[in-house]
Length: 372
View 1 (cartoon, one colour):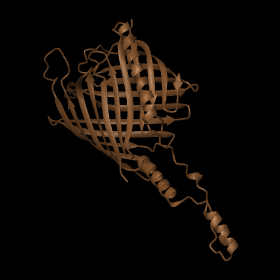
View 2 (tube, helix red, strand yellow):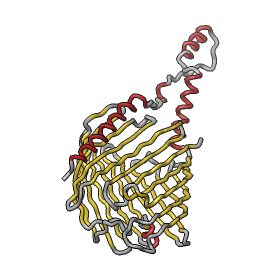
View 3 (tube, rainbow, N blue to C red):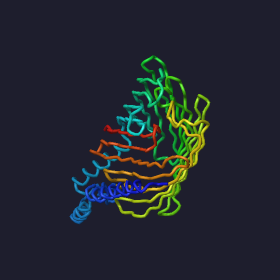
């Protein structure tokens, strides 16, 4: 059963989020998109031979925008194009934890290039550190590992309703062993539905997983449906096969109701339930986490701050769940971005569970700078 203490934690976090909303709604400056069709177009005659024509031409010229307006307009358009279509350099770091104890740290620095069709080509240098897991028995495999490598990623232009991406990574560790990663994904974005499908093949993200050369093949499907203006339904599936001949899957359903909405923030209560099966029970987290059976359900609150054009944007949620045969747990997730200057953006993400030895608490930090 859900404890009263957890309700208090959820209520406290909700009040904190609401307070942030009220503050940021007043201080966040919203950048309105430029309407290039609002400029009156005037054609002036090339030959003026009479006073009447000269007077008419002066009247027409009075409708032309002044030089300052045109300069600001060109600047706004060029800045928007630079943010959306300009080449960029980016960094991305994430750490995977058992609660707050780090197990994996990964860093990428990327150079991103747009081709003529506005597809993105990313070339990245990678560095990762795998720490020993919190395992009770002494194990020569459970040691620290350092990896360095290179990754290439292709992403189709975001303006397309049907998109796809692909990536490939090669890495070597401090023991001169080599590893690789492959991934492909497709997406379909419509007015009232978003559908994502991804397939990835990579080493288990832990030191023992790499040393034992256990690879994980993951199939993930995410579907979001806007049933009404306020009601949203999410359904997802994840299946995993491991090279040590183990596997699991999890199906999830989530319903959100938009209770409060303004131009700068949204609040949505949510309910969520999931069912999963695995071939083995590895809740100790070694060399990776797996449950032989999972049934859980619960609810919480989702909060969104900012608009599509504001410098600050955030979406976060806090939820409490009860799981069959296990202690109840909490989950806190969020993503935020902040445009420090016109061409520099900071991105932060987190996903935190209060499950022991889960090794799924992720903190992410990235930055993007767009060139001219």
